[in-house]
Length: 134
Image 1 (cartoon, rainbow, N blue to C red):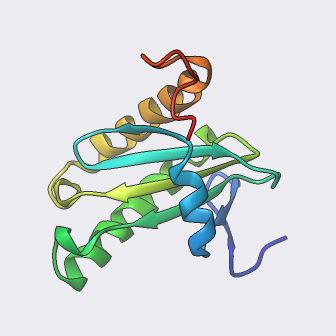
Image 2 (image 1 turned 90 degrees about the vertical axis):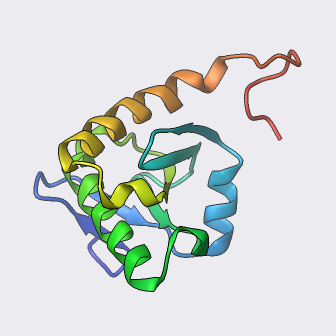
């Protein structure tokens, strides 16, 4: 099942690319966690392979800078492909600090954020409901 929206990392783990706006909006309703260089949004999905999308707002910089951030984030995801859980969609929201953050630190941060977003599933919020239930 390798096509334009499925990529294989060096470790052999396949990841599906999120392309449609609706997929990004759906992930935004899920659990969130952030670090200095990027934020991570995650939500359960019906697809068997994990889906990954990347976004960087225009506030971050001009087009070459935003593209460079997305390239770095794609490589971080490739390096951490084994940590993504099946039947989930993930969106990485790049920040300007991703340009200067050491690559190894970004990989470590992504692994920690993946653990955090999956641990937050049943954590209640202050209002008494489930976290991020919109």
